[in-house]
Figure 1 (cartoon, rainbow, N blue to C red):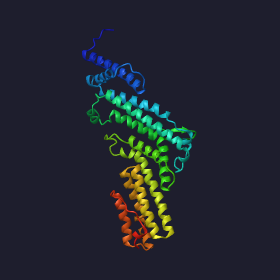
Figure 2 (figure 1 turned 30 degrees about the vertical axis):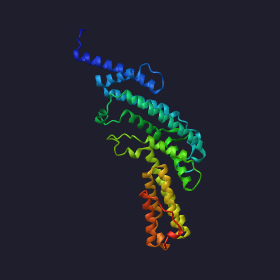
Figure 3 (figure 1 turned 180 degrees about the vertical axis):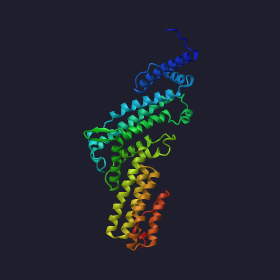
Amino acid sequence: MPYQKVKPQRRLEVLHDTKVARELEILERELKLRLQHRPSTLSFEETYRSAYRVAILFREKKKLYELVVTLIDEYMNARFPTLPMRDRLLQAPIEEMGAARDVESDVTELLEALENLWKDLSIQLSVVRDLCMALESCYYDDNNLPSVYDAGCTTFRRLFQQHLFPIGVNSTTVQNVIMVFIRNEFHRDRIYDLVDHERLRSSIQFLKTISENVAKNKVSKNTAEEDTPFAAVEARLLHDCQRFYQEEAEAWLHHGRLDSYCHQAVRRLQDEWERCKALLGEPSAGKMVKLVGDEVIRRRLDDLKQLEARDDVLTWLQDEESRLLSYSTIRDASKDDIRY
């Protein structure tokens, strides 16, 4: 076979690919060690230089980005199934409001494990982000990609919402378990039952935390906000609120007393505002109060008129709702305030 001389250009390409492969192999080993909290063989500066050579000198930012995102996905997929999802949580009827009442200790254990996992992931993502600073923001924007940190957060949210924990013929997600717990606690608070507000507040704050920094690339620009865990829980709470106050308004009307109905409506508006403002924040509290106003005031105008309510009474009820929505302090309703 005659000898074929390798062209210089081809020789340079082979040399380039060899160097890139060697650097990526080093980076893969070092990043795995750092994600697993194991001693690394290279210093931070040496690892940073290796990433810099791949991204800047060799102009292989795409390969570096794909490697980092893949390693983060593998790390999270290995860690998430280790969460303490007890059998009682998996066997609980997820769609029933009282499902979480008998498993509060298990929910507390799960929340603590989730918070620890999220803190660990945040630290590791910060380290990886600093190591890969050569992937400057313009690369993400030009290629319509989330940053390394945002990609890791997206992976965590995806597993939180979609990873199934099977047991027998049943299966559920972590989001479903936390959602049932929050819905159940809100329901118990509305009926003036004992509620662990500290645990409830911490669970909602956790959902807010993992819902932040949603990647705003062109693909998810219109749907990212609606897909967050906090948005999903808020939607279910709004649905529960509507159903609860529909039944409440029917019960108040059944007694046939206008003064009692007005007192109850104003008190419920104030309670819902204070509860949701403290736990969910003012934007969500405004949605809840508006929903309560729809159910107990606007949709009941004809029923209230049958109880001989005058226009000034109806206006007063609507003013009380508007006062809350404008972040003003609602005045205490007394029997003398109601004119009929």
